[in-house]
Amino acid sequence: MELPRAPQRTTTGFAFSFVDRAIQEGLADRKFGPKEMAAVIEHFGTARPQCAYCGDEHVARWDHLVAVNCGGDTVLGNMVPACSRCDDSKRDVPFEEWMRSDAQHSPKSRRIPDLDQRIIRLHEYTARYAYSPRDAEERLGVAEREELTRLRQSLLALRKEIEQFLARCREHSQTS
Image (cartoon, rainbow, N blue to C red; front, side, top):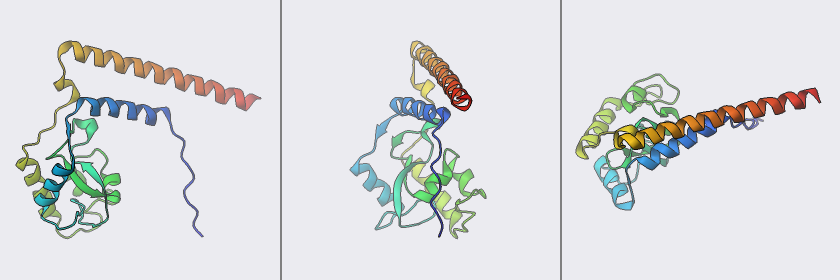
């Protein structure tokens, strides 16, 4: 009998990456509701949602073609249906690079037969909606960029302080 994987420790780096993603997402454009979802499905021409990367009909999520932490928005032209395997494997890698890579669960590594046509269709989709990502900093004025830099520096200092605290606690528990 195969046991489930043991729980992983949540690190401060992992936790603070979510804070930075929340900042990025808070600054990004967001207009993606039922009307936009229907337009995506219509663009890809399938009766039921299919993973835009591999064609799997077990669509579990909407994926950002350009990841949020790379300036991606939650809008038409950047959101596609995805199976969990593709979404987890792709992470924040540019979609075409990832699709052609040998990464675990990439379409190439899974020998998806119509890979080139899928990539063309994804490029047509971004062109149809004239989607172009912008970094968070590009969306801000000078004073706002300075404030964002200050906030990120404060977060880094807080992360370091927390990591030092945890190290001291671990040392103390090992000597007790």
